[in-house]
Image 1: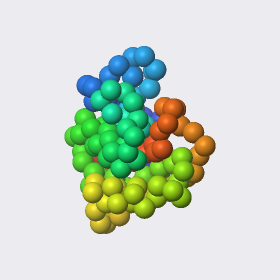
Image 2: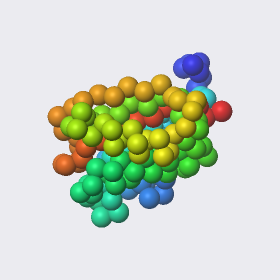
Image 3: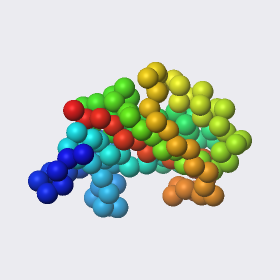
Length: 135
Protein backbone atom coordinates (compact mmCIF):
# COMPACT_ATOMS: atom_id res chain seq x y z
CA UNK A 1 0.00 0.00 0.00
CA UNK A 2 1.31 3.48 -0.78
CA UNK A 3 2.48 5.82 1.95
CA UNK A 4 -0.73 7.77 2.51
CA UNK A 5 1.15 10.76 3.89
CA UNK A 6 2.82 11.42 0.52
CA UNK A 7 0.74 9.52 -2.05
CA UNK A 8 -1.76 11.35 -4.20
CA UNK A 9 -4.59 9.96 -6.22
CA UNK A 10 -5.54 10.87 -9.75
CA UNK A 11 -9.03 10.46 -11.21
CA UNK A 12 -9.39 8.36 -14.35
CA UNK A 13 -12.36 8.87 -16.65
CA UNK A 14 -12.85 7.61 -20.20
CA UNK A 15 -13.85 10.54 -22.42
CA UNK A 16 -17.28 8.96 -22.91
CA UNK A 17 -17.87 9.03 -19.13
CA UNK A 18 -16.45 12.48 -18.32
CA UNK A 19 -20.00 13.82 -18.00
CA UNK A 20 -20.52 11.59 -14.94
CA UNK A 21 -17.46 13.11 -13.28
CA UNK A 22 -18.82 16.60 -13.85
CA UNK A 23 -22.48 15.90 -13.10
CA UNK A 24 -22.28 13.38 -10.25
CA UNK A 25 -18.84 14.26 -8.86
CA UNK A 26 -17.41 10.75 -9.06
CA UNK A 27 -14.44 9.34 -10.90
CA UNK A 28 -14.79 6.11 -12.83
CA UNK A 29 -11.51 5.15 -11.17
CA UNK A 30 -8.75 6.62 -9.07
CA UNK A 31 -5.11 5.74 -9.45
CA UNK A 32 -3.57 5.50 -5.99
CA UNK A 33 0.03 4.38 -5.88
CA UNK A 34 0.29 1.10 -7.78
CA UNK A 35 -3.45 0.44 -7.70
CA UNK A 36 -6.40 1.47 -9.82
CA UNK A 37 -9.58 1.52 -7.75
CA UNK A 38 -12.55 1.41 -10.09
CA UNK A 39 -16.13 2.50 -9.49
CA UNK A 40 -18.88 0.03 -10.21
CA UNK A 41 -20.00 -0.30 -13.81
CA UNK A 42 -23.58 -1.03 -14.87
CA UNK A 43 -24.30 -2.57 -18.26
CA UNK A 44 -26.47 0.09 -19.83
CA UNK A 45 -26.63 0.33 -23.59
CA UNK A 46 -25.66 3.31 -25.74
CA UNK A 47 -29.19 4.66 -25.19
CA UNK A 48 -28.62 4.77 -21.41
CA UNK A 49 -31.06 1.93 -20.77
CA UNK A 50 -30.64 -1.59 -19.49
CA UNK A 51 -30.86 -4.12 -22.35
CA UNK A 52 -33.67 -6.67 -22.19
CA UNK A 53 -31.16 -9.51 -22.43
CA UNK A 54 -29.20 -10.23 -19.24
CA UNK A 55 -26.31 -11.47 -21.38
CA UNK A 56 -26.16 -8.16 -23.30
CA UNK A 57 -26.24 -6.25 -20.03
CA UNK A 58 -23.41 -8.34 -18.56
CA UNK A 59 -21.28 -7.83 -21.70
CA UNK A 60 -21.94 -4.09 -21.59
CA UNK A 61 -20.88 -3.94 -17.95
CA UNK A 62 -17.62 -5.81 -18.65
CA UNK A 63 -16.99 -3.56 -21.67
CA UNK A 64 -17.49 -0.52 -19.43
CA UNK A 65 -14.92 -1.98 -17.01
CA UNK A 66 -12.59 -2.40 -19.99
CA UNK A 67 -13.08 1.23 -21.05
CA UNK A 68 -12.09 2.42 -17.58
CA UNK A 69 -9.03 0.15 -17.56
CA UNK A 70 -8.06 1.34 -21.05
CA UNK A 71 -8.34 4.99 -19.96
CA UNK A 72 -5.72 4.14 -17.32
CA UNK A 73 -3.50 2.36 -19.84
CA UNK A 74 -4.41 -1.10 -18.51
CA UNK A 75 -6.39 -4.14 -19.59
CA UNK A 76 -8.38 -6.96 -18.03
CA UNK A 77 -5.23 -8.94 -17.16
CA UNK A 78 -4.42 -6.33 -14.50
CA UNK A 79 -7.57 -7.02 -12.46
CA UNK A 80 -6.61 -8.47 -9.08
CA UNK A 81 -10.03 -8.36 -7.41
CA UNK A 82 -13.63 -7.91 -8.45
CA UNK A 83 -16.82 -7.38 -6.52
CA UNK A 84 -20.09 -7.90 -8.34
CA UNK A 85 -23.52 -6.85 -7.13
CA UNK A 86 -26.44 -8.88 -8.48
CA UNK A 87 -30.21 -8.45 -8.56
CA UNK A 88 -31.64 -11.95 -9.04
CA UNK A 89 -28.21 -13.49 -8.46
CA UNK A 90 -29.29 -17.16 -8.48
CA UNK A 91 -31.39 -16.68 -11.60
CA UNK A 92 -28.57 -15.08 -13.62
CA UNK A 93 -25.35 -16.53 -12.20
CA UNK A 94 -24.72 -19.13 -14.92
CA UNK A 95 -25.11 -16.51 -17.65
CA UNK A 96 -22.96 -14.04 -15.73
CA UNK A 97 -20.13 -16.56 -15.34
CA UNK A 98 -20.27 -17.45 -19.04
CA UNK A 99 -19.99 -13.78 -20.04
CA UNK A 100 -17.33 -13.02 -17.40
CA UNK A 101 -15.16 -15.76 -18.87
CA UNK A 102 -15.27 -13.96 -22.25
CA UNK A 103 -13.34 -11.11 -20.60
CA UNK A 104 -11.26 -12.67 -17.81
CA UNK A 105 -8.84 -15.58 -18.02
CA UNK A 106 -6.59 -17.48 -15.62
CA UNK A 107 -4.92 -16.62 -13.39
CA UNK A 108 -8.30 -15.70 -11.93
CA UNK A 109 -8.60 -12.63 -9.71
CA UNK A 110 -10.21 -12.72 -6.29
CA UNK A 111 -14.00 -12.32 -6.54
CA UNK A 112 -16.88 -11.56 -4.23
CA UNK A 113 -20.49 -11.76 -5.47
CA UNK A 114 -23.18 -9.99 -3.46
CA UNK A 115 -26.93 -10.25 -3.94
CA UNK A 116 -28.80 -6.95 -3.65
CA UNK A 117 -32.39 -5.84 -4.10
CA UNK A 118 -31.72 -2.96 -6.48
CA UNK A 119 -29.02 -0.93 -8.22
CA UNK A 120 -28.75 2.76 -9.16
CA UNK A 121 -30.21 2.26 -12.65
CA UNK A 122 -33.76 0.88 -12.53
CA UNK A 123 -33.91 -2.61 -14.03
CA UNK A 124 -30.16 -3.23 -13.81
CA UNK A 125 -29.18 -6.77 -12.84
CA UNK A 126 -25.44 -6.32 -12.23
CA UNK A 127 -22.80 -3.80 -11.20
CA UNK A 128 -19.11 -4.71 -11.48
CA UNK A 129 -16.37 -3.08 -9.42
CA UNK A 130 -12.69 -3.99 -9.86
CA UNK A 131 -9.33 -3.30 -8.33
CA UNK A 132 -6.39 -3.44 -10.76
CA UNK A 133 -2.64 -3.43 -10.43
CA UNK A 134 -1.47 -0.28 -12.18
CA UNK A 135 2.32 -0.59 -12.06
